[in-house]
Length: 507
Image 1 (tube, one colour):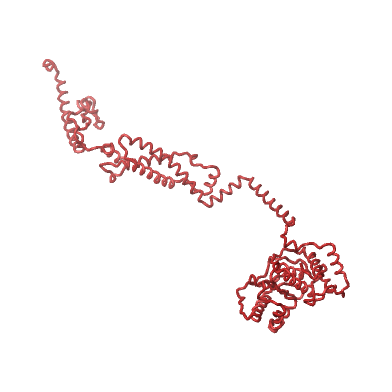
Image 2 (cartoon, rainbow, N blue to C red; image 1 turned 45 degrees about the vertical axis):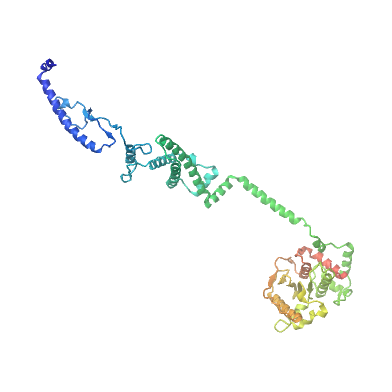
């Protein structure tokens, strides 16, 4: 060994001395780095005293390759040895992870003010699940959110879109609920953290997709305008429905026409009102209507009314009814009621002269002039006991009917040409109060009674059937029936009335 040293040349000794000097400087630099590192290193670990050299630093100045320093710089620098754990008592792991892991994660995912030395695995799981949900929502294709053609039309009509606000709502609600339920159920261990996060991410994707679809559908259905436009779209696409609607409407019109042309089956009571005359009855009526005018055909003893052929001629087609025929027919209606009181209402029928006498006073009202018309000795009943009181109204060349309807507590006015005269109803209301006061001594208040100008009634379409309409209004109302006849029935009613007058019996 000594021989080898002696044989070394002088230039090589100089090279060794320069390398030693360079290594001394590196030792000083490394000592300062070691001191600064010792102040920052964790108490859980220690560093070996042996030093290793790293590769050549890249920040050294470039020098000439012939110089001694350049040759020495090719040697690797000294680097610290890898740290190893101290086999002794130390702080336990938090959820299976070390503190260094939490420091690394917090430095990457939170603000400096939010970092915690102990770590927060709940917040970490929440952030991981949230990022998975956001990534899943943003990566969904458009087909995943499309509904069927009808619902898509509704979405286009409503103008709703899956914008950023909807995504944020779904992110917050879904991720918070899933993470909260997961953490309440159990706390993850160090071996199951990664698996739980993967499962959590897949569940978030599925639930987020369902919630987004439900949310969009609820918003679309709740929109009234979208619903209307949806119906319009259905109508456009289903032309068959329009065709069916047209066919239904057409068939309804056909059915209504057929029903109007088909004679309805009348109740038994109404059938009695339209019983056709027999051949003998028709022959008798024809003979009476063509008899000598001065011939007395019938005489009614109770009312002392004589009907001549001239008076009965008013029942010919196109003739106006006269007072004799109308008054006798009203007397026959009263006798009919007395024969069958259970079949007809309790009514009173004034003759055609009553109302003229009542309004013959100075102020258009004279109760005294008609006071004895309704005496107990003459009528054998009081008007206050009647259900209805019929008053024929003659207005120069037109016949109308007024009714004191005590049963329904109202005053009615019936005109075949839809005329109205409130003065008639007021006069009759005043008369009824005076009549009850005079005959029974009772004060009756009719201020609450109604005044009705009947509109739903058969109308007259000529200038001569007003008298026939008036007496048939009386006939039907005294039976308690609705007015179920028309203008076309007037020729039949003329013949029927002539038959009843000739027989002195109303049916």
